[in-house]
Amino acid sequence: MNLGKYEIETYYVVINGQTETRQRVIYTGLNEEDIFIERYYGSIRDGYRGSNTYFKNLTWQNIKTHIIGESIVINDNSNPPKPQIYLNISSIVSIERETDNSLAIIDSQIEPINLEFISIYDCDQSYSLFNYVLQNNDTDIDTISADITAPIIFFNEYFYGEDIKLDGSNLSGPFSTENGNTFLVNFDFNLFEGPNPLQKQDIIDGLIYSITDNRDGDLNLGEQDLTIYKDIISVNNIVSEISEVGTYLCKFYLKDLGKNQNNSTVIITVNQ
Image (cartoon, rainbow, N blue to C red; front, side, top):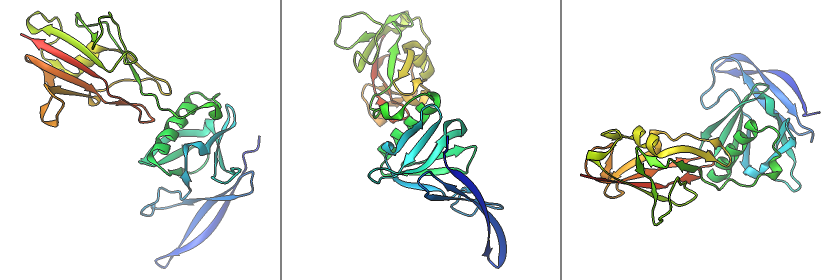
């Protein structure tokens, strides 16, 4: 397999009257197009991470499988597309979000690579795609469509002994957010077998059995993904716990890596 070749070139620059030595890696792809990756020794200049390799105006469809299980290619936007760089899957250490529309690939073989996308949507899709391929190396990216599916929450059958019901249905649980978006729990506090007061983590533990995503696999829901409102959904009605009689709307704001959001609601009615 030939993913291109690398050569190290040493050169000199004068900054504020001082001569400094720098190196850059010249990567030549199979299309004979050169990409320059600068290695700078010393303090990193403002605005740089030690690399000036950028690929811009990308969409998520610029990312393709080169050799299944081994390498990924990032193509340009020409027709037919030309490869800009090849990456060994095994040498990718991590994928990091830089901004809303850019990612950084941390690779053990070369300096960091910055990918700038034409939209936040393309960046989100690419972030999700890269992470999926890193977890499933034998994936052919050409067979993967855009991820537009939100995570699915699977509920317990009971919330500390009380039924978890699907709004508008007489069916028995357990339910998931594939069945609907609104769920109901009703109990009397003086007969309730669960914690009192109910903190966020108590609510999460009592309601949720598991969470799965079509792209990201098993997920966890943290306290930051749950907002509790008393009576109505309003920033003025946010509370941190359930500790008295009333109606509480427990709203989930759970996103996968592609920013698909599950925004289901569990309405907990507490009677005297």
